[in-house]
Image (cartoon, rainbow, N blue to C red):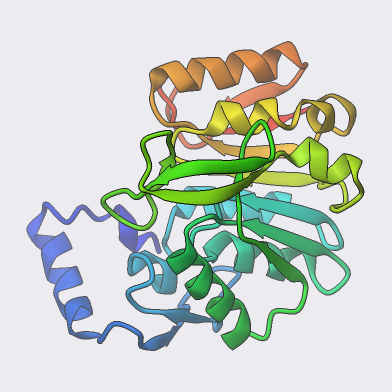
Length: 245
């Protein structure tokens, strides 16, 4: 059931959410549904939809139906690890997951989620992903999920380009890449052009704003990718896309 789809602006939504406020932050809760059912989640690390199993309901279901056993997944903008855990479960012990996250407080929770779930096939890379390797500014957002690379950021973080890591054989070629980086999507794609042109991984891409959406779709279309909206919106209005070759 998609609990997260019930708006908190309705009385039903407020009624459903009221008991959740009584759960102390830091509590380990079992995830209630989906492919991660029974896994542990830290309350307060993200929204309650994660342990309810309804977080980004349509996206996680599409992701779960696509990712194959034994494959390699890059989670770019891993936050505190919901998709990292999901990918780990989907690829199994024969697969690999690489989670990229630059914000130190998120990395702590990401590693803890992997630890308490005894995850052995996921590697955390404490870095932003962009069009080059180096040090970049990072601006914290209104929540831990909304930070982004910015020259005016109050924090300096490491940045990596996927093409560089793969060409140096520091990382294997992924079959799937999930990207959610709060406005840095084009930079991630520009730093991955060799990967996209030669290996054609399947992409799950969150776009942030109409201009970035058009740029991402244009770039991927020029490379021969077929692009569709995730959900029921038209491609032009969507903010989540799936790109396949």
